[in-house]
Image (cartoon, rainbow, N blue to C red):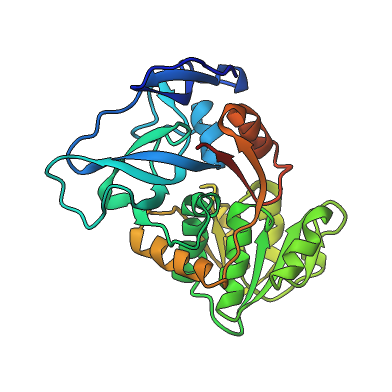
Length: 317
């Protein structure tokens, strides 16, 4: 990905694709800064977090409205400062406010975001921390708190617990007083133990279904063989929550458990509550790597390979 210099005042750098496909499609380009319109804010991006959805959009494996046509700017989760608010907009936010949230096109120096979707960033939160919250923390919150109803005495098994969603899910369950077991690779063991996960099971060496029984809830971001083996650890009337839209209904019936195909819904109030927990030190986002915007291609590659523990964040401005 190339750098651009000099530049015009009305342009910005953005990570874009003109064709769907692999990493080679990703380019750093100079494009026009979006024009602000009513109900929206032009946000000067300070940090943007990398999620699996970013490379899935790039490969056209996920094509939601707003990210279904090329050319397009990649990225979704961000934190930044409101530079301009559209004329005639009704909002309690002001130009100069630090905010965070999600909008397609956040891998850029500026993004145009609906005012209703912006959350004011607590002053004590670093921009990188705030950017790391929206998609993974909301997914974990709604799965663990809203759907599973975590409470004292419950036992959770969280697969891939060192990742973005998994690390938040483990912390939310522990915050509610539940016990949490997790599968992960050895480099993340110390981190997971530090947030109260016990036991931590090495998925490369041990079979979790031989070590656990009577689990109330399994959080499954993997599917396939992992899901097939997870039915055995659930108690009767337990729940498996999958994040990938793939459930073996027959296996669930045989095991006598509930299976939920879960999808996150963006919710500003949930995000505000999560931010307050982070600000209070109760929940601690795990950022494993910070890269500059011009290394967005490499950042997405790392995320896709699954070799990173915690969040990868792009520092923009």
